[in-house]
Image 1: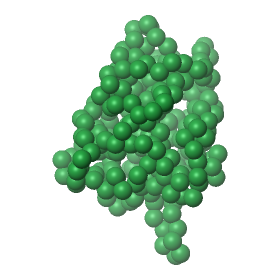
Image 2 (image 1 turned 90 degrees about the vertical axis):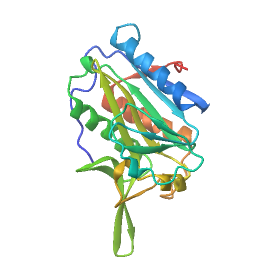
Image 3 (image 1 turned 90 degrees about the horizontal axis):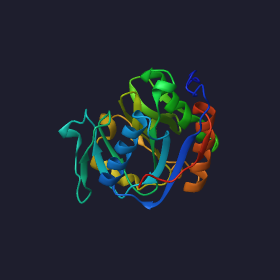
Image 4 (image 1 turned 30 degrees about the vertical axis):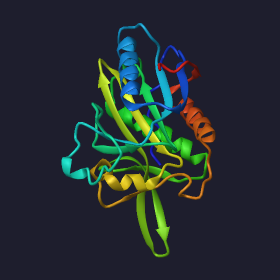
Length: 233
């Protein structure tokens, strides 16, 4: 497990908006709405927001994506995006959380912020008795899979963020029950030596609503209180 970072809660304890979109939200429209909200937060014209959604199947290429890591897109569209990281997959059964927080109010420390995101995911996964954590040199949250005397590590959640004017956007993706075969079209996050898993793949038949409840409770413990909010799109 990752240790709990300090000073990630706002000193004024203002709640973060917590929005959940039903259905599948198209990627370009979601990114545009997220960037507009992050800009409004930076201008003091809007409050912080965590936006939970699902996307239709797609691959996104972060700023460090290598062309050779796109193996076979097939019919799945590919989008370039401004977040950190390399190629990743989004699709139904995966909970994406776009995290728009004002780091001016939470300490201007990007590494500590990323550790906070890791702690958030790890805390949510403990709700389902999943032992997980970050790994040195590998972005995201990982679980160990044992097959008799053999063991391997699979990624269950990805992290890719961008900071502009000390406001974060993009965020995390947690594999609840996506089609894991879709990850075979890319080298996820540029890592070839490890696999990808999900809560259902681990034998945890978790619904999206149950995953959302766990994410919300863990977020409060790391970042502070939340309140219901309307999605920005």
